[in-house]
Image 1 (cartoon, rainbow, N blue to C red):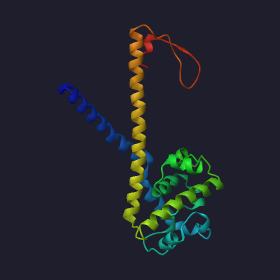
Image 2: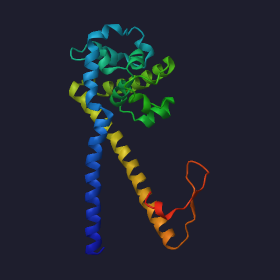
Image 3: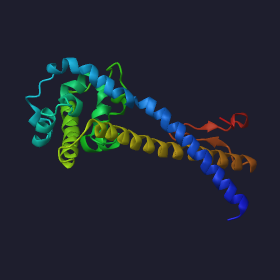
Image 4: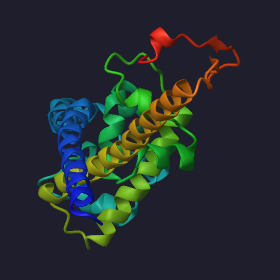
Length: 223
């Protein structure tokens, strides 16, 4: 590799990592991860409204439930997913999903529920049925119980917050990889169009989302 090629590669990597840094920050704000603790704490005064008598049906392990229920620093709703709670506060789906260290894609694959729109629904426009809420609670609680069991019942608030951030970071990294692919695709498309235009080979565009043909207009090449 020549010096010029090395310099170009270094500059490309520098730009890539700069974009990655700002992308991570924007996504962290978009996902509202840092607001989860405040939302959960706001529910603590009404925690008694959520009955846990049916916890055995919600995917919670016995040892994990006993540990959290008797822990002086934890409340059940801080750790385990209550089916009625996520129906009433759908944005907290992301909180429990991240504590369970599950991606949105994993949730859709395992229980067939696409939580992407629901997690960002601050106005509860997308209703969550009882069956779906139960399936999601069971999935999250099973994984959360496994995490507690693997900690040998020594989970701390700091570790819980660490899992939340680590899971969010993994999701952002996945989004970044998808974004890179989309940007690269656009660059390749532009190069192909430019080359075809220069050789007078371009006659029309056929959008991927439909079969309609759009006649080529050289004045709109940059679009």
